[in-house]
Length: 284
Image 1 (tube, rainbow, N blue to C red):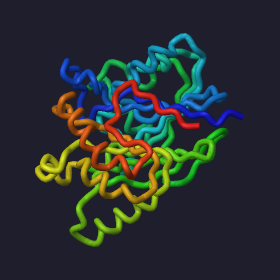
Image 2 (image 1 turned 30 degrees about the vertical axis):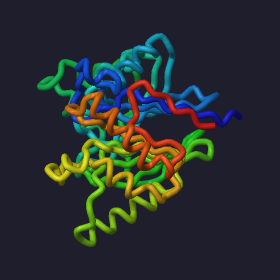
Image 3 (image 1 turned 30 degrees about the horizontal axis):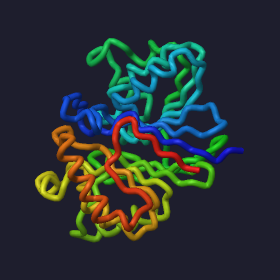
Image 4 (image 1 turned 90 degrees about the vertical axis):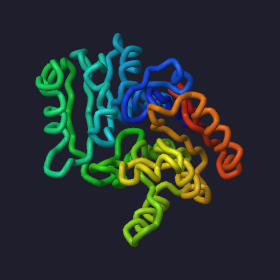
């Protein structure tokens, strides 16, 4: 059995799509990743930002089954859901997982999101078989991988997913605010987070702000890149891939930030960078 994995980033932008010319190097589509397992024909996707549309366009003529793990139902993580063309193929079967949103489950949340008040396509109009599953906090074992999650520090119930695939750990945390330690609950959260991500082969983490931006946006549910790096640099994480770029941070800003990150923190990781749309990471 081949142990090769590929992670592809179909969207890396946060908050809202930003298809400006000065954002094209890093990309303007919102969050979506795909994990490909060699020899396994089931799709594994996390989040449904606008990036998922391009993924779907490559798959429209293929009979598919797959699982989609949604971290939370903010718009930038669901904006591409209705534009994923494989949902319109009756041969296809998908399972969509989302943490409970208070008293509301996955299907109820998506029914509201895709109501005719906001969009002409409802979830009942898709031709594919789609199972909407409310994902309580437990470890799920599937044919070639397992998944678990901890709760992120965000403005609504949000998952930090950990995928266990071929003896590799891939942690996906596109929306997570790592706070400065101001009280016991902050310290407790940071300890839980560090224990959850320690030793991961890949950590994909929110780094929407720099320190100055973050100080004006505390409580928004996003991290500054300096705090992410300081919090993880001694955890033996192999690859730290920073994502959820702010729509107002253009290519020049991000390129300069990327250079600073690699110069200051490259010694702590096998790879550390601001990830770009379309980038592929190979694990073997």
